[in-house]
Amino acid sequence: MTTKDSSFFLFDNHSAAEAAIRTLGQSGFDLKKLSLVGKGYHSEEKPMGFYTAGDKIKAWGGTGAFWGGIWGLLLAPAVFVLPGLGVVGMAGPLVAMLVSALEGAVVVGGLSALGAALTQIGVPDDQVIKYEAALKVDKYLLVVHGGADDQARARTLLAQPGPAVTG
Image (cartoon, rainbow, N blue to C red; front, side, top):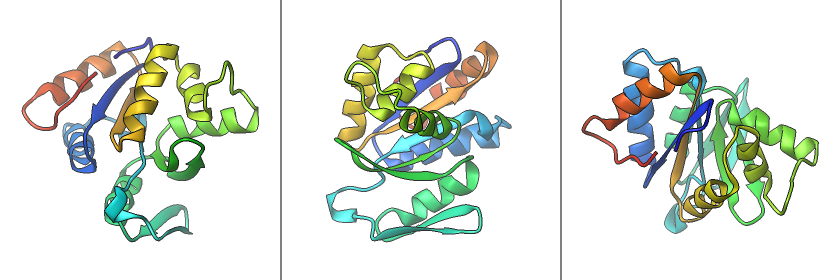
């Protein structure tokens, strides 16, 4: 799906999401224009904890290595406990929008805080529901922020053989 300023890609697992981010990075894409959202664990991989070290968030247990690597690549790493989703790892510009939604009580029309953040970047309500449902079943949402050229480039790069993408 594409909005005016963002494109969205769903991945079935953290390996596919990480491969997509690395593909974009290796092609010279500005990683500051990416956001990633995911629960970051499966039932057998519960994270044991998160902590900050300097300006980086670290995790141990479960998929700590995955999030540690992603947080080293993307801006504004964060961990939230969101009602209905549980522990959610995030990174990128979407973090600021979520914090804004939480601080400003911008939760509208029964949407969650994450739904409100997605709505702020132009995602229609039916797509918000789709993305939240995907996150609930441990998928990962990659958001490409930027103009039409950035979005087209990302779609082209991610359409090459490799991780499965829906967008």
